[in-house]
Length: 562
Image 1 (cartoon, helix red, strand yellow):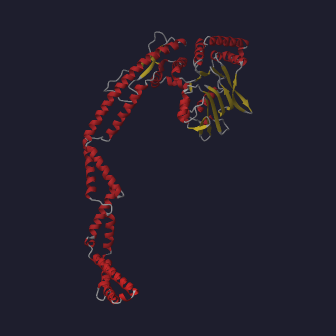
Image 2 (cartoon, rainbow, N blue to C red; image 1 turned 60 degrees about the horizontal axis):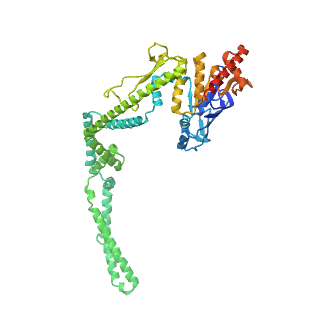
Image 3 (cartoon, rainbow, N blue to C red; image 1 turned 120 degrees about the horizontal axis):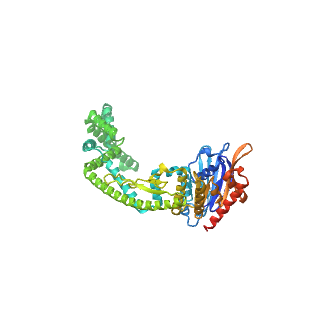
């Protein structure tokens, strides 16, 4: 339950600490006093979207802190564990907001994302206000209410799984989309691309070799002149080889006369062999068949390689990757008829399965809707409404008409007859503000046990009601507050009289500025506030007497609930 709410620099509130109690906590005050500020501040700390207009004029930062006391079996403890926070029954949530629109959220002092905060607090507090009134009028929300009332988790899990596979089949089939003519055109393109790359006989080292050949051919005359000159100098008449041979011969006769002569003789022999090897290499150069290839043929080959790179990838590795992918796509498309048939068969089977699961879900919903309607009628009668209520389902589609989805095929709307003898009509067309207030209270009474949310906040649940109906609503709130903490903003004295803790919200001027303050009501102040709610200041002593009578009536009623 919510134990404490600290608000700083929110709207007209400078700094306010509110301590809440078990049971029914009632907040009241003049119209415009700032009752909605409390709900706005609570919504903010619970993770709702931050609006920098919340920040008090003249201040840079707003701050709200909420302290909760959790039961040992609270579902929130498991969520804290999953989020990596300590399992502690004392839970403190805080959130700040600056003028730049940046907010900061914390759970027990540790930073967290606002989304995490919202996921946790959905298990702690349920706020019902005017927006929920409007939400209940929308038919698209009615099926969600039935699903929340009687979850069919097993069916829905199977349905979600089957639908996910169905969508995967659709995505796979998109790869084979288009007509046979389009497929053939793609196959022709792929065939041409594959043939063009494979017929080129690419070698990753070829381009380097071709560029070297091109360089030699462009310098053919220079190379020929250098090679010829070198051969003449080395192996021509009176050339280097002859001179070295003469030197070798000279030292051959004296090499046995000393180590120094032998060493020179060996070196001359080595020099002769090296010179002969150089001559042989140069002769090979002069007869190199590289020069037999024409420059035009090399240019043609390089142009072809350049063209392939431009089409299929900047490197040979890219071209080979393109070729691999093209072959795979070609093989897939070539076999597409068989694959498409197989995928369509699986898709059809999944549609049948989804329809069957949707039918099972529909039967579950219809049975749950009947039970729900009975409970709603019972609750509304206790709230003074002799109403006929039903959940009306549209006719189920045939399997052929059915468009698979993860939520089944049901379309449903709540129908209401507020007066005896009147036909059922869509609730959105016939429900008044007071009827919607009571319907919302009935709904919360029905779903509270299922949802197990420890704190319920009702923002002006009493819209459009008064007199005897107000008394009945007050009783219902008292009954609900025995199971969950109920925080109610009201203008009705009957509800204020039923409170276990009352709070007065009022505006006053402080240092030339208007501020909103919240005061915990003691017994006398509670009498004064109920008197004001009954008829204002002019009602006098009679108002005080009537207020005390209402409080006595409320206390006697609550004793009967123990």
